[in-house]
Length: 312
Ligand SMILES: Nc1ncnc2c1ncn2[C@@H]1O[C@H](COP(=O)(O)OP(=O)(O)OP(=O)(O)O)[C@@H](O)[C@H]1O
Image (tube, rainbow, N blue to C red; front, top):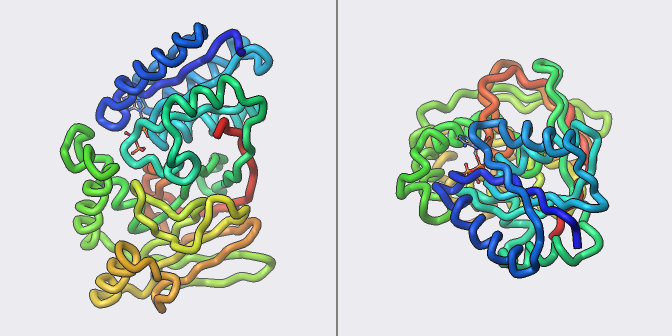
């Protein structure tokens, strides 16, 4: 068993779930007489800095292990920091956020005890597909665990983040209520843009787009299946674009996405998939990556596949 577990915890994630679930984790670790050290995040992007500090202080993969408690945003920051340092330290992740889309696909049935025990006793972590993107305009390189999207999904995400984390809208149904309210609020913010895609040596343009989302699993916003054909196990980069939207198309797409899950059949949906793709927008549009706001950027992205180890 490792000599020490380093825990990074966002205590107020999921409206306070982070702190409560941490107590459960402590009880399990204590039952195995494990030594641990917890770092709490105090502000946005702190998880990235904490990760860098843990490594700088001499994290030794032979003796130590890393556990993260937080939402998708906190997990994103930790993986981003590690990839930036060219490290592949396996992560045990306990989802304590509101949306928890990563957890939904990778460890849906696992109890906290099972996750802790997998970390303590399994010898090998599982390499899972993640995306690495580079944006030419901002010169940012970053990881994507769930999705990176522009337009409608990013506006919805932005409005959802503004809803108080203690509001009942965020507390129940994995935050989906808050997401649904924001969907309706965002409808009048809809603005169209053009997307130029380069895939397998071919260039294609989708005009009049309202949402363009590159997805590593089907979900967005806490279980809303935006891309019904995406799969977390399949090693491919997929891009789904909703375009040429009018009132009738909005109603049909809401029914397709929220109820029937047959949006791939819609004439207003175009989907691309490959091993890597380039995507350029014709103007600045609000973006999100793993639920974190990117503000309005004139995105010019190259997105490729990579892998990262988790105790799953
Ligand atoms: N103490 C803090 N105060 C304010 N923001 C924080 C703090 N700690 C982390 N953050 C930021 O809050 C953002 C959201 O956190 P996180 O994803 O962990 O939880 P969540 O929003 O409850 O869950 P989800 O992303 O699943 O909806 C992250 O970008 C993170 O950087």
